[in-house]
Length: 195
Image (cartoon, rainbow, N blue to C red):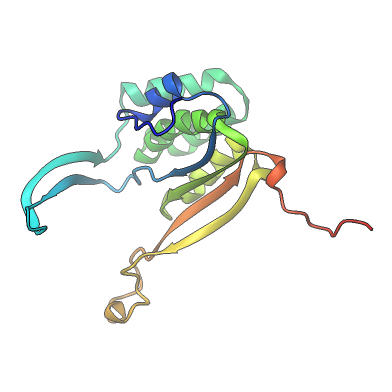
């Protein structure tokens, strides 16, 4: 892996082909949320105003297909805790959008675990609809004892803001960061050292 190098492309391919084992100190992952929306790259005019020009960046809608099935089979064939978790998810979720999302995320999280240094940390940005599934999945990959914290990230247009007080409190008001460390070296000390 070269320093100061930007890789463009599918992160799974880049991780597998270009990133060495235990070579990364910090990972912040902000994957698609399975929001069932299309996202576009918006361009600006020379004066900085928003342009009507845009291109499709990605479609955040998931459906079971051959790619999802292949990812699922690859994970299950490895065996172990992650395989067990994925089989349990499939029993519970079937071929739902959430199952496709998990099948797509799992190989990437496995590779991120591989490239993270023993002293490294990962922050996984997710929303409340997928948080509980991702927490179980990351527990299986990184180990539940390496979970450090769940951080609530209040959205800038959250209902507690003055402009939102008239709206019912039913919308999404925060995202979640799941914080894990790679190894035991970052575990907090629970007792004062003996003197």
